[in-house]
Image 1 (cartoon, helix red, strand yellow):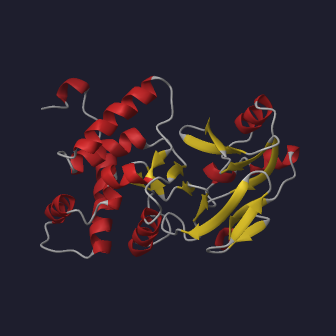
Image 2 (cartoon, rainbow, N blue to C red):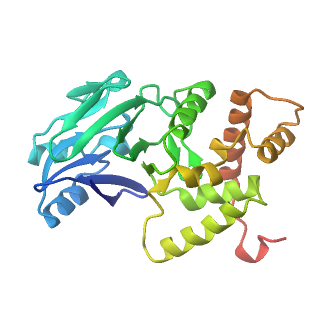
Length: 266
């Protein structure tokens, strides 16, 4: 598989999976026109649409794509309301000839039916896992989201993670705040700043890297756990409560106004 990022909307990515014989699939089309343009530019034929969850910024391009290519739409069985023609249950597999075999993993938390799609060393994780971050809990519980992240972290370290948004720089800002002495985070900030300055995506990322820089995969690391306990003003927390404390902490951090550049170190 050759996988290409198509930026859409303000900060979404549609993933174009290019197979053999000019065939392709797309993951989470939040907009149709840029995807159709890229398919045409590469002289490809769309054979399937894959959805991770029901939010509009991940599926509102389906109608426009199917108007040009009346293809099957694979998506979560628990959210098969409008566009999904082939609902997927947990661990269900399906083959797309000349493209690949995919397995659906139920990864709830961001939404209740959210799935991740695993294929040949790649994981299309929607809004469950971001580079250095994770999705907000709009429908699921902390226990569900932590279990989903733990499940994804069981993938081989070499697995490439294809998430739904360009959130890496902002996520790293919080990760560095929570773990200021983590040298892997500091190095990753440099790399992402260079990539974004050059107009390049910061993703995909690898599971190996995420285990080093992503606080939501690191809540059991002693130094970060100590920071979480300090923030919560608690002597002990369950893993789920530690995760939820960290998620709320990031939400609070995201809502803080950015200081002017000259004031950020004061």
